[in-house]
Image (cartoon, rainbow, N blue to C red; front, side, top):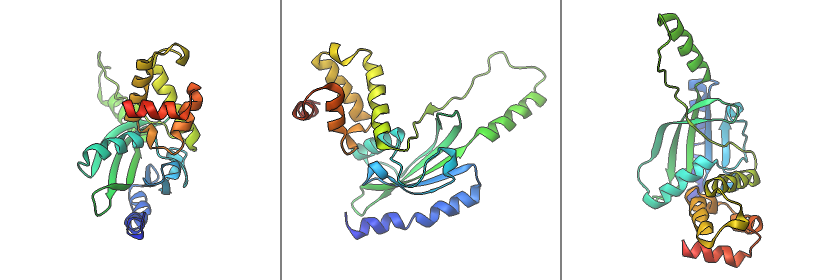
Length: 218
């Protein structure tokens, strides 16, 4: 990638601290370089919210959004979706794509607001204002997003999710089962990660050419 793409991403570095300082310590702001998914995080503020730092890989949610964007290249942002950390923090998240002159996504700016203290305040206000608890209260639970500190863990989590969806061990899988699992992995953005084919061949105990052949078929 050339200097133009680097400058395109670097110009957003000051935004990270500005946005974080504007919204306070409950707002994590992350700048990703989508050309290096293994170490995508190039700038982060308030990383205590998800436990990440510079050099962390992209998340599974980020991979999926990037994979979808590669197909349609529509819009500049995915705004206000709900996620949850493994510690149980509920987040309201927004991802803004950074594009080169050709319209390809080369980076993204992610804003994650920790809703935990606000939800606690809301619950307290509800308790005071409500004469009694509603019979059919509905909990707003966001989809869990896996925040990891190394790319091997990320690949392992994606493979585990696909295996759970297949609902059978590899040794009992038919070829069609494996092709479907590969479709699920591709949809999740797994094959965007460097070394993913080698990792999957090791998990399945098959050769690299076999994995590439399956990729061609899907």
